[in-house]
Length: 275
Image (tube, rainbow, N blue to C red; front, top):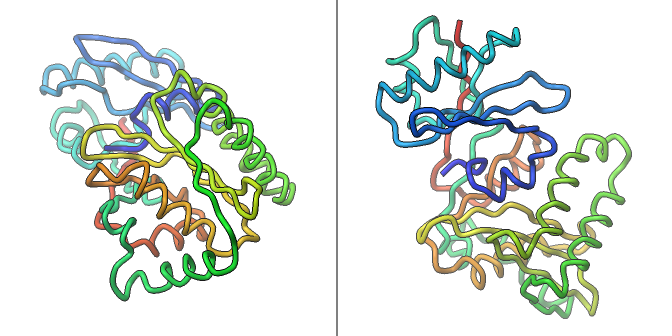
């Protein structure tokens, strides 16, 4: 259920992470080489047995050692920790990675916004509806350019220091949008007073589970972020039980926003250092 481990996410971020992978004993060993950061491996992908796990980890270890890199795994889901604790040769140090842990919500909560805990969200939407005329439009090949324009405006309205930090995300978003016809996701745009002002992209991974990859809106239109999230969950993702809104990356404003929707749980992730 980790947000990184689906094809759309891997594809849209491939130029930043410079992924490499190999297959051994029916296990995929995926590694990332982000610019300006240390290389790391993901937990082996496949049907786990102690033997397959050990063989995969040792193959990755050999590759890292040959290149003189520190041997580290990142974005490791909690469910896989027992394999690292029990089937690794050498010293293992495990650190909780709060910044990359995913927020999981009940879809019905994000749609209905019931109860006192969602009172402010309902107010945001009601104020938006009283103030603006809107149109909900499904994302498709004919209006992809509108989503790209929203993305450009969103980044243009940030200051230079913020833009440099967000540049990889900007490239990733463009990769997803420009390859709409080849990727199995869905999305939506919101037109406000006749102008497209927000868009979102999400994907149903399994029948009961979806992930939202992108959500961008004009910050000056109060309630627009709340509105597009509610409407997209209702019209685009209403058939699933759970929605993953990904991580907050340690950004305080994102952490506050994602926490305010009252997640029912987190997909906890860990960094694992092996000597």
